[in-house]
Figure (cartoon, rainbow, N blue to C red):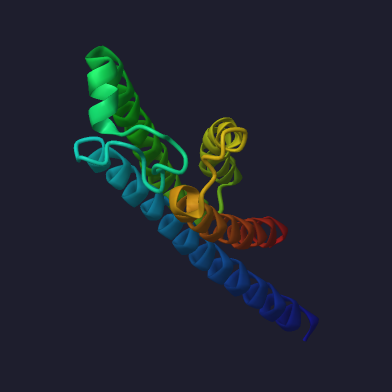
Length: 168
């Protein structure tokens, strides 16, 4: 009878781990897709009359596209290429996370570490630069905060599943 009870408890634990891995990776994936959407907006705005990043306006930068072009066309093109590059790196990081989630879903801790550390490094480098010059508007960083919140909740849920899977 003891073996049957032990097996039943093991199955329940494994089901809990599977549910946590499934829910966690879905949330992590939703956060990553949100980052891809943010990158797409970032990219498109570079080619519009607004030129400045999402949520950045005259309260944060006292000149617009026309004034920047009038002052220095080469500076305008330089800033534009930075917008494009940043959008590409945001999207590329999110795509890498999406690919790693297959292995996170299987309970592989190495994949979880990679999927979490890639966006953490990007955010740790990028976010502090927003605060000294008041570029930390909710319009600019709100979607990033939302995507990060969804991603972090998913990462914690998935980690619970990975740890339960290991205790198995």
